[in-house]
View 1 (cartoon, rainbow, N blue to C red):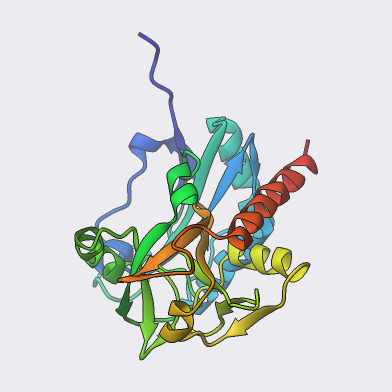
View 2 (cartoon, helix red, strand yellow):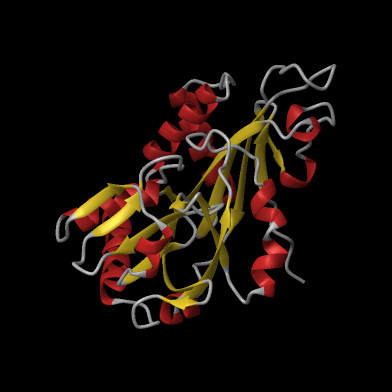
Length: 284
């Protein structure tokens, strides 16, 4: 029998086997759900778009008033060292910064920095080929510019999503679209303008890359998108680190466009995959 692969994590300023990586129960992440994180993919030992993710990680930490225990260059080196230790062909890494050990369970302590890397698989091809159904829900995430560990609403809605035969839930506030629990939202208007919500959303790295790619061929807009705009769109899709681009073919009971993944969405996915390969080629 082959020996089980030993996977390492970084915690308390050292690399340890993942099975031995623990936080004390006094940590505010456990006591109050207070903390931030970020997440990126690694292909062939190279983290994709790492600088963008580090930018957002430090921005989230600043918004949540959590000092990062390592300077940016030192954190980058720890990321790269963990990648070398684990040596996965394809993986994802989570950078987690907690509220720290709190004697009273309310006041922040010294933040705990944790790096966790685990093997991943590419998104399901069926979702790309057929598209997905989503439902909508009125909700506004607190402090949306920060990538916090608070996913209470998204988790609570999992059962409802499944009951409706859907794959995800799109938040809106009084009819103005914002975001998914873990991804950004785009529509393709009838004139092929590509639009995405601009306010009260976490501005994802994949969102940024898609906007840059799209702007070379299409008009792009960042602004308010209503539920009516969505239902009248030619195409719709979601973007995230793990999903890349996934076509959306139904919102609640309404089909979007032809009810099939559209050509603009699929072309952007090809371009995004090519951009990833171009990025990796720089480091070979």
